[in-house]
Image (cartoon, rainbow, N blue to C red; front, side, top):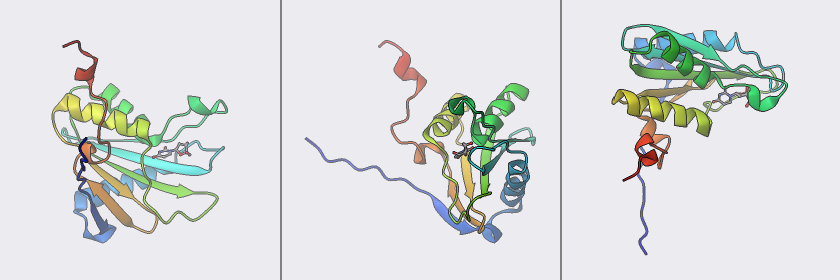
Amino acid sequence: MQNKKIKLTFLTAHLSELTELDQELIAKAKEAFTTAYAPYSGFLVGASVLLDNGEIVSGSNQENVAYPSGLCAERVAMFYAGARFPDAKIKSIAVSVISKNFEVTDVVSPCGACRQVMAEYEEKQEQAIKVILHSPTDEVLIANTVEDLLPFMFKSPLLKKH
Ligand code: THU
């Protein structure tokens, strides 16, 4: 039996310390959460995806009375980007949040399903995706690759017979 450890790397910063481009992407994510349809949770999430063709594609969470039918902001943005610009690579994704019901002080942390989707795009494009998580207090957490957010991720080669 062996005890093993995984090392994850991430950065924390204040919004003002980020590059102009990263700050712009966060501003777009903040703009996007205003379009959330979240009557059940009151939790408004915006996600903006920067592509290598310079386009920025945004999405927000879309809820449904049949709760599992709704979709998180990150997947709305990434699927929209994939559908509109199928050949473009995702350089980074910024996520921002606000709640109608309470004060959010932490960065929003993407759910497992959204991390899985990010991971697959990263694998498909053979290029790391920078994930930028933003809080309403302007604290930011940055992971330079989805690998740091989803260790032991399920990858498509695992589907193939050896
Ligand atoms: N949500 C997102 O859109 N992204 C996240 O990273 C976390 C959760 C949404 C799903 C649901 O509409 C609401 O926030 C409450 O879970």
